[in-house]
Image 1 (tube, helix red, strand yellow):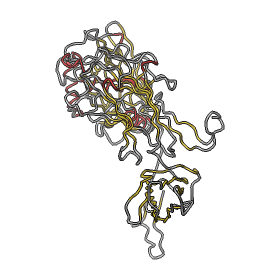
Image 2: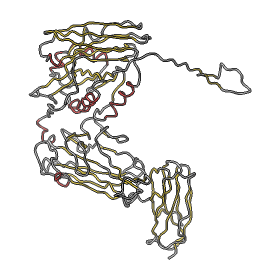
Image 3: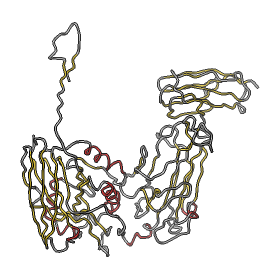
Image 4: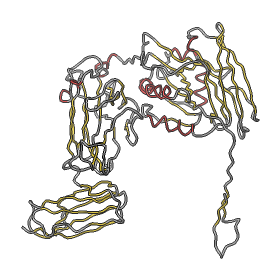
Length: 545
């Protein structure tokens, strides 16, 4: 591509030109490597690994995972002790300082919390979209007490500008403990690092195109379950820390993870750890969509919007605010509210939930919905069982009308026995029938006061004259929005005092109207003003009684 500035006064091209050269090389499909520093003695790891393990199982054929067990905050992690020298070397190699800590393909940091799907899928989807210059295949063969591993590489394009190493790890797919040791927080661990073969720095490989094969062998060590051992290999450019491709051996399939998992918490805080809150938030909003011929049971101009939690979590454009990256809202399978069918709800587990700070709170923000009417409702199912009267967990629902900048409308606020839908319990609670759920319905009348007249996009912003005018006691104000904008509509008296604010929110393109009732006002001249982006218009109306 060649582009330049064309001017009759300047015909010298070299000082105003841009060149871009693009070439394509043969490539292979990429598996994405996730390397995590974790610990059996970390509560944060126990919580976040639920989401990470679910993600790995959901993408099992295209993800290679290596979990390095590190002895922090307590050094009594036996998995760490068994591989201490090499794990410490990997800690130094990555300059790791905290757990959990995860990198995708060597040099892409993965943000917490891991129960937010988008934070895991963002690096995964990005790396999967880029072809790799090398393919890699791992074949494991167990003979007696020895694992033989063959690595086949096919360099499809020359490897340039770096130091390229083949690195091989012995991993254990699943390690389960029937009894949880002291200071541990979990009972089952996946893809645990056991040994780097022949060492953590790997071996150099040829950088020219063509096929290469390597064979390694290693002994199954005491304490390893030979039926769960497999090899994982990856090609890394140590100059940039980028992993070019990865693969794993063995013959494993995605696990029914968490079937054996048993979380444990300090006994001195157990009273705060054994109850859970379930919220199935269907957010049933009516949105202007035009005629809907396949919904004869409702107004043909509108249909319901139902937000379920059956797929990507949090759903697109939803947001979880979790300041400490520990316990927060998460998807839960096995309990679902009665309003709509489905397998999943949202769960807030109060396991050891920051009991030292009673003002800590996590927030779940929904997507922004446009075209809402004052006749719309928000509906959600919820279920909660308290531990006892000493623990007053609460749930608040707030509504924003300015696109999530502020949340001035508190429409639900219950806690303790007032929130309870089931009897108090001293064991983990999960609603097991519809009688243990309640449904709350919130009318948007008084919150949303602007009625959409048409979804046809106007040519320009415009504030129409109210009708009728003069009026007594009510009149209708109509305005047009030509592009998505933050819009305010306010009424003022002749002295410039604000009488009423109808709208202060982000609005989609369309034509809208609002009814103004002046019953409580005196006769006289009033003004109504519309602001939308850079557009401002004010008109006069007369109230005669």
